[in-house]
Amino acid sequence: MLAAGRSERFGSPKPLIRWGDVSLVAHQVRTLAALDEVVEVLVVTGHGADDVGATLEGLPARTVHNPDYAQGRATSVASAARAVPEDCAGILLVSVDQPLHAGALADLVAAWRAAPGDIVRPIYEGRHGHPVIFPGDLRDELAAVDDATEGPRAVVRRHAERLRDAPTGYPHVLLNLNTRAAYDAARAAFGLPDSDAPPASGA
Image 1: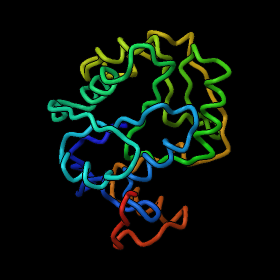
Image 2: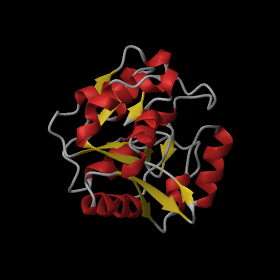
Image 3: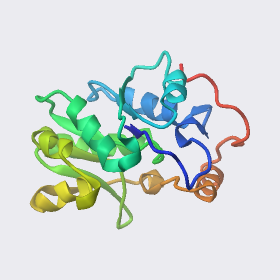
Image 4: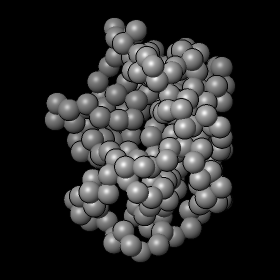
């Protein structure tokens, strides 16, 4: 999970905003950890690393610090890939500001299990969403991405013949909380608590 950015457009650290009854980063970890197929949850930190680590206390996640986070998102993708075991079956690449839904994740993982050699992405009503699962044999390519060549999108382009859509009935796969307005709209759409209320402990 990528949680290293400065959140400049948002105006405050996105990993720490409320989603449900916990911080967004804690919600992401809890949702991922509930999947039987997930062997380990890695959280790439950068800006505000101590605060992100504190909200993850007691949760089943390992933090990987990216000292180069200010140079772009791709540096965090590469940091994550390098921290993944070389023999991993797949890499589920998640951004902290794209809230996960358990049902949508289950659809995605089921599609990946049916074709573990493919790059699998969710699709909702004709629109592609996130997160994306990469097969483990692309680990080294992900570890070498940079922003000059569009990061992981370049890996997808190189292996377009392996790209597979996973239909889902959950619109959550389209969420992207880039701005405060997007966050407020998503919170209203899904009936989440007031964002001004402090999130509970991640554990």
